[in-house]
Each structure stands twice: as C-alpha cells, then as structure tokens.
Image (cartoon, rainbow over all chains, first blue to last red):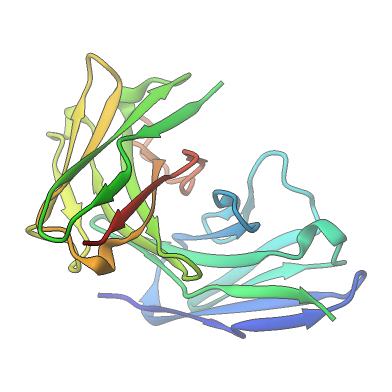
Length: 107
Length: 125
C-alpha cells in the first residue's frame, strides 16, 4: 500500500507568511492527490483536488503542486482563518490514504 | 444543497456491534462512491472504507484495520449508506465521517468534497 508522509508535523508562522507543506508518497503516483483543511471540532474541508485544482469557493492563496512522489500545498499569504490542520490524501481505485497531518499554528 | 447526516453513534462495549447510517440528499446518490473516514480524538484522519455505486456493483474496499469486522452497504431507495461495525475494539473509538467520493458517472475524482458532521463512537466497558 502507498503511504503518504507529510512534513512538517507542526509549523509555526505569522499572518502574511508564505507557507509550504510537503507530502511524499512511498512510490511514484499519478496526480490523484487532494488537500484538506480541518479546524478544531469541525469536519475537514477540501481545498485542492487532482494535485492542483482549486475547489470552488477556496481562496486563491491556496495552491497545490507536484508530481511523482512529492506534492506540496502552499498558502501564499497566511491569514488568521488559515490556522488549522492540513492533510494530504492519495486516491487510487481501491483505497484512499491520508497523510498524518500538519498543524499550522500562530508564531 | 448537498447534505450528509450521520446517525447511530454512541457508547458500546468491546466485542459488540453498532451500525452507523448516513442519509444523503441534494445530489444523485446513485452516481457516487461513498466513503467512511474516522478520526480518534487528537489524531489524524484514517480512511475506513468505501462503497462503489450500484452501477459498479456496489462493491466495497476496506482498510486493513477494519477488514473482516466492518461492512459498508447502501440503500439506493433511501439514499442511505451504512457502516456495520462488528467485534468492536477500544481502538475503534473515534468520530466517524461519511463523505461523498468519486462521481462514477463522470469518471473524475474531485476528492472527498462533502462531509457529514460526524458520529462519535465510543468503545468502552
């Protein structure tokens, strides 16, 4: 089974910072990678699908990129609303696999 | 408006069974793969399993941690997806989310684009 390893586990940043979260697959995969945001006590919300497609209604400061084994989620200018936990997820025909999550906290 | 509403959570003793339901509305239920995801308190998201659309035989896939104990099914007439959990263990304690998955009529994967509010399952004696 493919494993998805996120880094870092925790990230301290300030409003206005550019932030990048990385997800590494245990083997080369197609661009079936999605990213989710989860605020405390809430269900996750999808941000990015198919590696780089922005979900409708998601601010354009979020972007996704990558190929092969390495995928990234970038927040171009961190806003107060963005302090949350982020998960990557891989999809194939028989499973869905999440990374372990990255908590973005206020510096 | 797409809605997913879970029910059936609660406190259950180890070794016993529990069934969660997820009522879907606001979209063509029969076209979609439906997926269950769980999250233990303070932990990350864990994929539990999925059920394909009836057109694809309503076949299922499961995570290794629940295979043989959990069963997902769907009722197209009621737009409900079920998660039957047997032989429950303390490590199954989590919030269980029902999610909308792949649209099999289009063949495209847009991620888990809608989530229910979650149902808390606590396995304890």
